[in-house]
Structures are given as C-alpha cells and as structure tokens.
Length: 63
Image 1 (cartoon, rainbow, N blue to C red):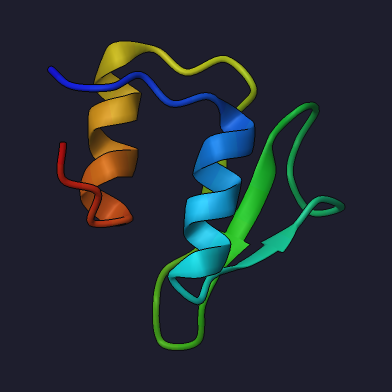
Image 2: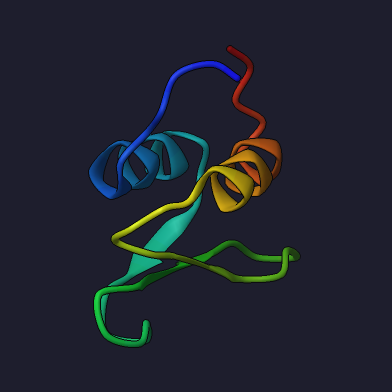
C-alpha cells in the first residue's frame, strides 16, 4: 500500500502543492485543506488506511 503518512506530513505535502490549511475551521483535531476552485477536505489526526488512500489520491501522492 505504500508509506503511511501522519497528519503533519500530509499538511506539509498539501502546503507544497498549493493548498491552504485552516486549523480553526476543522472539527476537533481535524484541519481543513482549501484551494481556490477545489472542494475543501479535512485532514484528521488519526488516519485509517482507506481514508489515507483517498487523501493520497486527492493530494496526488504516488508511492
């Protein structure tokens, strides 16, 4: 399945790819990734394998 990423790593990758991270709009330990013309999505603290696969696809991470 590839490398497992934690929340900090996904936030760093999202910022590198032009996403803005809003830590005040997420719920609980979630943060919200936003980009003009794209649908925003949350990045949670605890990431299960299925959600990780969806986040990798959304952020275009290949590994």
